Structures are given as C-alpha cells and as structure tokens.
Image 1 (tube, rainbow, N blue to C red):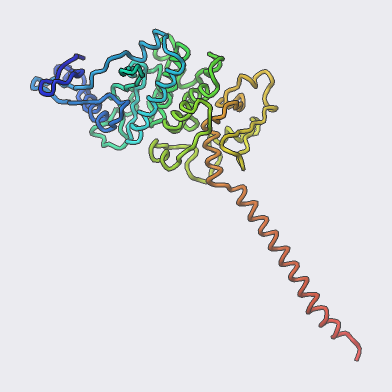
Image 2 (image 1 turned 120 degrees about the vertical axis):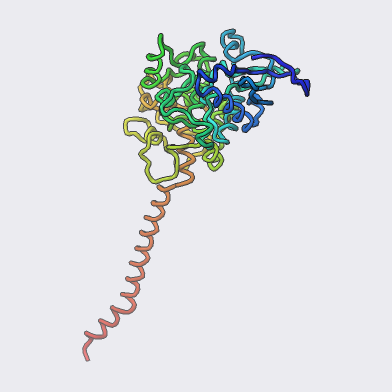
Length: 397
C-alpha cells in the first residue's frame, strides 16, 4: 500500500499493488482484486471504502486506487482501550448500515474483523466508519466466473468467523451479522467470543460451543446492548438476527422503543434463506420451538402490544432468573428491556400476519351459532305446523 497522487486529477489516493510475479504463484489473486473493486463500486455506500480506479500494468502488476483515509483501525482502538461505550455502539450501527447496503445487493463480506474496520474523524470531530477489503466477498447474485470459491473452502478470520462459515458450509448475510457481534464482543470485553491456543481447537469451539453471554463477562452493560450482541452470536443462523438493519435499529434505539419490522423489505434485502420465519404451515422450526417448548417459559403473543413482552418468570430457578439471557434457550427467557429479542419480535410479527388461533376460534363460534339458530328455527316450525296438524288428525268426528 502506498500513499499516492493521481497524475491527472491531483487527488490523493491509497494505491494497493500486487506484483505480477505473485499472480503466477498464487492462483486467485487476480480474481480477488477484481472482486474487491467491483463489490465496493457496486455497493456505493458512505461506509464502504470507495475504489476510484483499478487496472493492470504491462508487467502484470495489479493496482487499486482507493480513497485515502486518515485515522486508525478499530483493532488499534480496541488495543488502546480508549473508546467510550457510546462510540463502540456507533461503530456497530454504522458498520451494520453499510453491510445492509451490501446485503441488499447480494454481497456478503465474509471477513468482518477489527482490522478491516477503519475509523476516521471529520473537521467537527465526529467519528465515522469505513469498511475495507472485500477481497473474499461473495456475491450471491453474480455468476460463478467472478465470485466463485472452492467448494468447502474456509475463508475469513477464525476469531470473528460464523460457525457455518468455519464448517465450510454456504453462507449468507447472517454470517456477517455473527462477525459484527464478535467484533463488538471483542471491543466491549477485550477478547473475542472464542479463543484457543491453535487454529484447530478454535474451529472446534466455533462448531461445538456457544459463546459466553455478554452479561456474564460485563454485568454492568445495559440489557439492550447485551440483547443485540447475544442475538448476533447465535450458533444457529435461524435464531440469529436475520437482518443487519434490525440489529442496527436495536442499537440505535438503545432500549427506548420497540422495533418496527418491514417484512417485505427485509425478506428481499437480507437473503433469509432457510429462515424459520418464512411463510408456511410448519411451526416446529427451531426459533419458534424456543417459544413453545413445554419445559421452558412460554410467551403468549396473541393480542400483545409490540412494546410489551410478558414472560412467566416463576418457571425460572430463583438463582438464575437475573442472569438468564433472552437468547439462552436452556435458561429460559428473561426480558427486561423495552426491546424484545429478535425471535420474539419475529414471532409477534408472524402472529399478527397469521392469527390462526383467533381464526379457528371464530370458525367454531360461527358453527355453534349456526347450529343454535337452526335448532331454534326447527323447533318453531315444529310448534307452528307439525303439532296443529297432528292434533287435527287424531281429533274425534
């Protein structure tokens, strides 16, 4: 990387180069460069580091001309431990806003980590986020000739990698959401959710162990923040935040209001493949099972306002009620914030869209009413016509 000046425009840029001889030794470098240039150009969001030019020199050297940024990486900020809590939250909000724009276009970054998050400050002293390096991004809407990777290949940084990504399985936008949760967990606690002395053990933890709840590491943090981070760090993508926008809105509200979900927008924008909340009649899927398992507290969503969630806390053990996370299926649901966890919000929205219990109750009442009316009409006709006729038939003379 070099700081350079464009010879025609005089604009200061960051020049990223790869020697042509390396392209022959490492297959895929050229495709990665092209991927980074096209992905950033396609998204066109203020959070995404802008690519100003790209090309290849006669000697084979590849280059990218990027906007020149002044500031420091989020990794440096975490190591310096000098960011306020509200600044860390703001980093999460801006990062999620940029990822939402990428996800709208089918682009999954796949390498969200503190090193790829750059912090800049404007003349007014306001901090802003820039997301770097789309070199391993995946475009789910592009052809395989541009965004293909080897089947089962593991790409990304393991400390911030989603479990499905560590397993080499196909990923969607929810893998980026996990990574954002892992980055925020690191920024708030000083260490990533999982750590191990070697790569294999770290991958094993990702695949087999739930990360610690944020509240268990820092009990003084507000409930809404723990809810947001814990919701991103669910090993099962189906019970994770399904949308970067929804997670960003949770952080933005800071527990001061309910989240309004735009279902049509989010289903189109976030590639909610294999989501437990898609349309269908089967309610036995993982996230909804968390709300209805017989051994766990149940949440009644019928007739419920969006800003209130009532949970039967008597079913919880007294010593665990205060420490339970709203995302801990084993410990039950304890919701103290005004913002319910994502699986409850989704269940509420689903109940509003398909109020089947009320529908069947109405049908049964309608059938019962019809039977009563028919019985009454039959008795009236019997009294009015059948009985007089029978009396006339048996009368003497």
